[in-house]
Image (cartoon, rainbow, N blue to C red; front, side, top):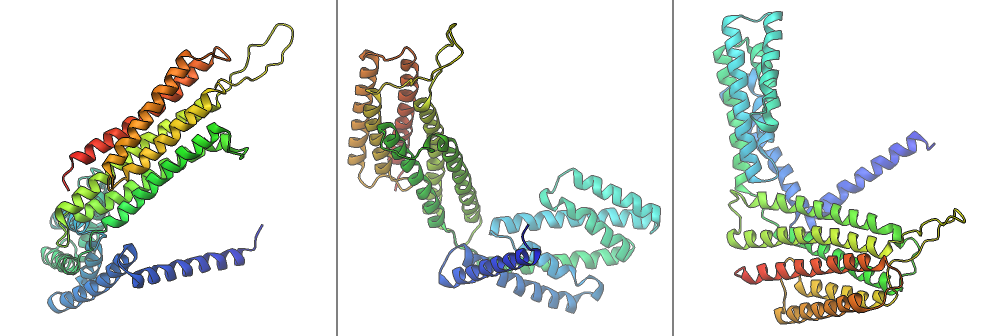
Length: 396
């Protein structure tokens, strides 16, 4: 077991390196790191201004709420900031109303505090205000315990929170985070490149040129990694899509069109990964012969014809070439070349399908496996064809 001190040092070192990379990325140029640094600076400035204003205008016992709500109002996007601020103000309205109702009727007692907390928690569980629903009991406790549910205290509390929200939103709108559609598109390009690489590797495996003995066991893992990468890319895409909403720096048409193409590409790659996994399973399928009555031994036998594999590998190479010419998510630079690749892949498909139908079979179980492999390749080509058609219909 390693030394706890060494582990603590390693953890601290990794945190320091992460902080250094964050600062370096913020200085290097536009991107997530710079937006994160700007968010920190805007948060510090908004909280300071909110505290100064609340200290000048309101009693000292409520000034802490102003910088707190200023920080709460500063989320990663303008849309998220406005939405969370509206939800928090709604939670504050409900919490202060509950505190005022109990304070003016029952007074501040142990039993009334118990009932108030229970009521506020019950309201929070209704999930009327999203993530800010948990603020209902917090605000109710502050208003009830700190001010006894008095209307004057609640008015100052709401005023302090309003000052904080306004300071946070003004700071966010003054320097709104710019939409980084290039970042999302790069993630999607990497995702499509990985799918192409998997098709090429699968083709080389079919040709028998892969020497990795563990390749057969790797395909489920590779497909799961592709799905995980697609999920991460979609999360980045959703964040950038949210960043275009209500953003004064938003590039209206270009951002929407680019993000829509990215969404379509991710969906295509996710479906393609499913087809690749099915092809890999078909090519590696080895049924066992039925046990003979003379002995218990069972000998595996291949279910893919040796004549089928080289031709099918060429089909996979042609499919990968078509996917490369598609150039997702931007679209094909040369549509004529993509059309030629699709036509060539379709021709190869017909040749392999004809050979599989009319050629001799080494074993009776080969045809279902051949049919599965051909069907999944055809589906990948249909995905590329469909994406190409949608791209051609999208105006530039």
